Image 1 (cartoon, rainbow, N blue to C red):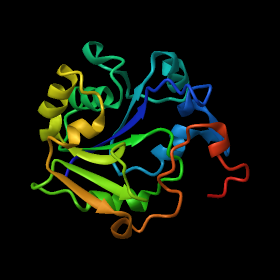
Image 2 (cartoon, rainbow, N blue to C red):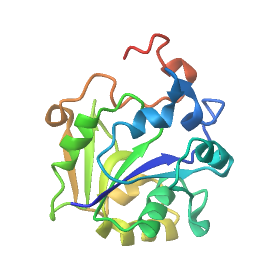
Image 3 (cartoon, rainbow, N blue to C red):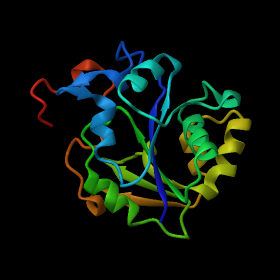
Image 4 (cartoon, helix red, strand yellow):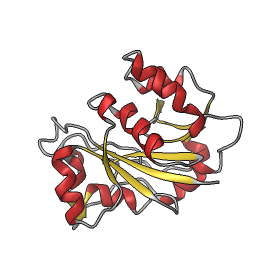
Length: 193
């Protein structure tokens, strides 16, 4: 199974006050906490233009801006761009603001990939986690259709796909593993989750 890891780091981070991907936490930027927990293989970063120098300075090779025709259209644009630019069977999509995700969780999630599913989505604390999920390449036409119809919410896409929902019990997740960092106060001072 050929998987490309996709880190979504193109958001405006308005509530956070600075780009979350580059925020230093426990000696490294938030995106690196995420990157270290992804599956084996290539990782691409979908970035905001202002972060390109930061990623270049950190030696990141595969950093792309959203495709021009969908720039500014949210996470779906990032997923679309990754699928357009990099051929793979599956794409593990991960938001850059989830530093507590574990490699074991990504591995378990990938074990649910099959020919019967277009997307593998965790369900944690009663909420779907579509920005910590796997998408098969066959979902690309549906993503393109959503973007053309100005349906930018990932939930709109999921209604068009064959989705395999994976419960937190199946994933054996830790309590805060899927916590998004939206404000600085969401990051524990001592690093404990």
